[in-house]
Length: 280
Image (cartoon, rainbow, N blue to C red; front, side, top):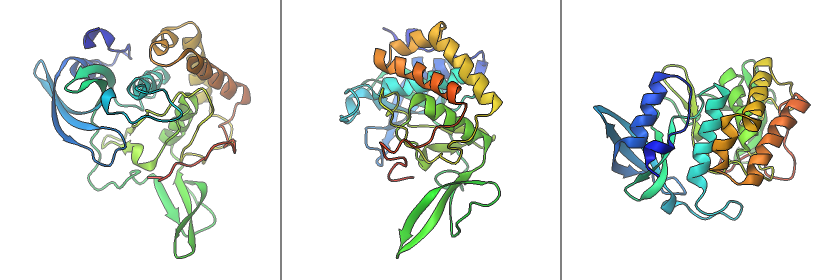
């Protein structure tokens, strides 16, 4: 199927629509490889009808097999995460498509520029020499920092992160690290690397536990109610059905229903490591 026919439905934003057309139909030119990634991640340029941008291309052929996910499915899961993000209206995942490229089919995602001085996590994470997080921060847990010392790992008490914590609970993100948080110069927060998501078994592993057990905000409840409807009768369920397995899709519905019934942010289950390693 031509890439242009697989562009997912998104919001009415003209900018997002143009970005998706660029990513899906543009000519990809590989400029380098991100060496720190466990799978093949290629930094590319893309051009289409006079527009140009930088993007990331992750070919399915470059995916490393995982014991708990079917082989060759990570690119599709990245697109599925984008679709759910768009359905929330929060726009937390950069524009993403599946398309053919120089090394076969793969995920193609718009490159997000961040402020040059921003470290991993964009100032949204910190280690404190304290037992309490203090104003503006939420505690995650204590971490060893060497020489027998520990420090309190915290994240910002930020509405953008709180929304992301809800999104990650829905998509069952097994690897939310600090380096996956991209604060843009315009104040928006983007999140990347969503290959290990949507497993039918509970695998939530994240640095964003600061709201664990706290009541969901009204905005989050409204979003979850809308997602439940879209997953049941709307187009979202149909689009996800072509990207994840039937049992995984049902698990998404169940997680949304569970969050609405509990009315609270999830807490670590104790059956799975709660915090990813390395955390950044």
